[in-house]
Length: 116
Length: 115
Image 1 (tube, each protein chain N blue to C red):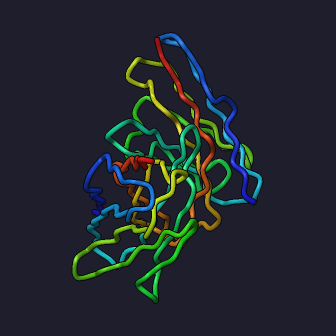
Image 2: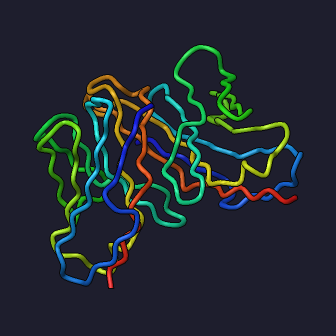
């Protein structure tokens, strides 16, 4: 079974803090994704990565950055957390790089981040 | 640009009744369509997906969905609801975007099962 783990289930931070969310997958997947999930808005893509040290902006990258130093690990960084970044953050991975439009995405359990 | 519309953010059914969750999509190319389920305090997991071939797709836990191109729909059904089906369900469309997978999710439908 594919396993995607996220470093924290719940996180509380203060406005202006730098926040790191970590995600690890154990199935040698090429692609990794970060989404945020908000009620009534579904999942929105923040960033994705198709290879080590490669990254692409998703639909809502503002206020976020990412890092992928190793194939199995994809980090989401909030440089200066703000209250409007309070949300559920979901990491996902999928197997293929190019031409992988039929790929299943495998999700971690999510990190619920509260910014006070 | 692709998009997904899920009709009804909340659906309630009685245990044993038919489950019908609606999904309509728009896509400029032949779509790949997915249904994911999210149980409380968990991430999403795949229920079923349509890529090519047979338009009626069977998934896990007795769910199935039918791809209807003329109606641009991919509704999810289950003949008899079980209490364990209570969850949030997301329809998604995937297409190739610049050589990479671009997935657009619907806003989700929360299914409540009443005993």
